[in-house]
Length: 350
Image (tube, rainbow, N blue to C red; front, top):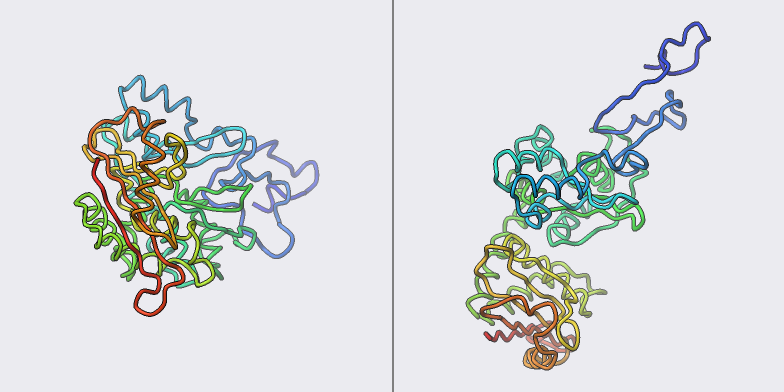
């Protein structure tokens, strides 16, 4: 490599140009690269090659139209990567498998890189597990990609692991905000499967409790919902961040992690005269009711329900029919003793 691409006399130069592909950028060796003539394009900085990193949205639209696939469902499963000036980019392997098999599901588990995913996310770096739990809840987390050594062994901190997962395609990177997130349902399923192979009791508990929480909500068990949200809120919010509506909203997104398979969860949803804090819209083919969730603190859950009624159900909810669940959630941030951080919930069926 060094002899072919680094210097030499005119008579030694035998290659006019070369195009090479691989998963990782060139390995870092010290402060100077031995291969300075390379022009690198990576998942973190694809630049002019961005349209060729995967299928563009227009290409996927055409494939769905030609093969009679539901584009919105394909987007839910395989979208989530985006580059400047290109927009959404989809995994070609996953889309083509879905086209050929006429089935939308997780195709990552059949790839070679999946075998090592559990190893990477199982590394016990401070904050890594908490970040992955947040991303499973749909959040983006901050990452510093400059310390990564561009190999599969030189890890010193959680940012190195997260950067590797960007290059492997398990995380999507926002270069402007310097954040990463799990891009779509397919990759979220891969993370869920991988954590089952590791000693990640909290992830297994999160998934089971999330399923129980959704069942309790749909059955109208407000006490069980309040208790579950109280637990997740405490586990995933710091002392400094606990007492604000954003922290509660984040906790709810994590708590309802498994609901994403049957619901599209939309924060700040336009609703009549205002905005609903969270709206759960059933995915195509689902028989579940729409859920409107209103969050309050230092008031009461009935006030949250009353606000939903006052804002009415017009706007983008007009196209949905059938039962509607109104979920009001409140906690008293100044309560003391046994009532400290106590959550309350009211569920009303319309």
